Image 1 (spheres, rainbow, N blue to C red):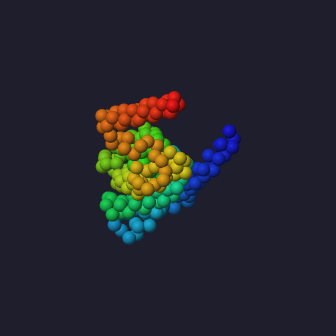
Image 2 (image 1 turned 90 degrees about the horizontal axis):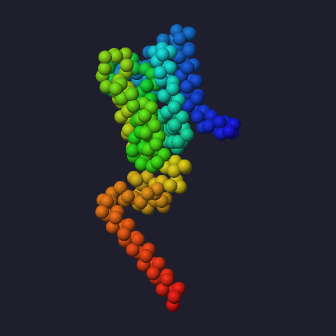
Image 3 (image 1 turned 135 degrees about the vertical axis):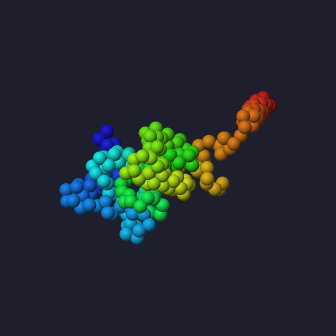
Length: 245
């Protein structure tokens, strides 16, 4: 049991490091009065461009950081454990893509915090389940929807003007696009039973279910079953005849 715990901690070492970094930055901002909010994204100003990279690491206060800590840890851990091949690339793509759209289209104010990443990662995990259609990804997508379905309301303009709904909305959009881009990447634990429904026909791996399972009508599936059953019975009769003669 101890080995499994240590192994799991090793797998999520980068998410843990990220959370530690967020708290260290907020502590520095609070105790040293650094006023790091100026490192956020300020739309359509050249001085706001660096915020595309720095804004997710800056929070307005401790409450803001606490609200983002749990979902960031859960989502980045899911990425590190279940989507190891694309975890870094997906995270970076969501961060840059979301930040760029905020810089281009958001209100003229400093946009800070990791909530855009939260929405981007929620969207990525959900849409990966939709695009890849394997058991693991579908279950993870359903878990994420169950845990974070309440986030949906903050993706649109609302009365709380201090909330960057633009970051949330653009994060969700970029998460969807990123999931589509990486839909063909098959993780090591998927290789034995899964082929991407988007993969080439020449792919040598076998799919979990026949490729046309969900394309056939009920009548077609019944006729295919009856044909297979007829062939099986005919083979049994042939076998008995060979045994007799």
